[in-house]
Length: 389
Ligand code: KIV
Ligand code: ZN
Image (cartoon, rainbow, N blue to C red; front, side, top):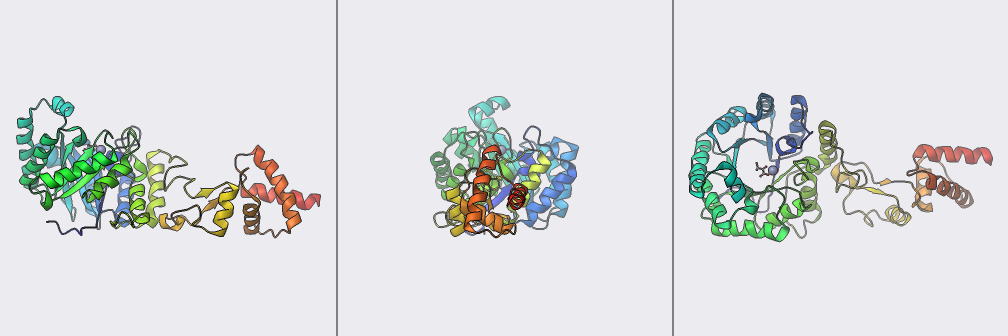
């Protein structure tokens, strides 16, 4: 048995490894160290800092992160090959809590790529996990493309990895193919049917090709997985990985129906999102859940009026919970009188009802011509008002 509490879900962040694998998202050494420092501070349990054999630069970044991390475990990825595993170990060995993560593709198409038969692959997994386990007692095994692997063979690979000493078993949905019910059933089946499953932690690692990565990760947790692999802003190959901010906030906001805890300081989420967006050059879409520019913004009159009266009317989270100072009431053609009055009051203008009526007509006229009416526009509107009065 692991000493992890039953309701605790570990957050394994792979922004610096799977995230960086997005075409065009590569990061410099300094940028990686800056991101890792923030992830460590915000309570990420395991940081996958890179793929040390991939390049000397990756090796150097993983080594430095391993040396500076204060509380997170530092993980290095390696294919199931002794050279890769040794290189990963060299890079992470100075960490207070190093982890080797090794993998091979187990589905029919991935077996085809390796040219190994099932029996050859089974023996290879035994040898590679044993090799890693001789270096550290913190070994993570991934049967890559698990969700498209035959169940009997998947169970066999997982059992071999556990017997050889793996302490975390990752079940990757490498191509974002699974769906929530299937994701849950797979984890439930592995936990129920693989000997030794109760001795290890099961992890879920989802890609977002069908837009289901968050739902699939949460379904896996409900079925018994206790580690979610994810990235900031969902950065990752193709359509990306499970977004850290989504799973963490879903578990916080809907703790009533998903009673699991993470140790993430959610007030650092927005900062992390902006840092990763700026470093990777991948802008966050405006309507992205949790961290998008519009996630806490309201333009329609009904919503703005509601928000001014009761902040829970159209928001299920407080902006401060993710590190934003306030909800933003965006002034545009859908905005109503209540929002205009409140905006103008914040800008220092006290208006009587008749004055407001007048300004409101001119505001609507302007809003029809502009997508968004900024504070400066309102100030200009008010000074025209004073001049023409
Ligand atoms: O998606 C995947 O299968 C991976 C593995 C290396 C775990 O990223
Ligand atoms: Zn992946």
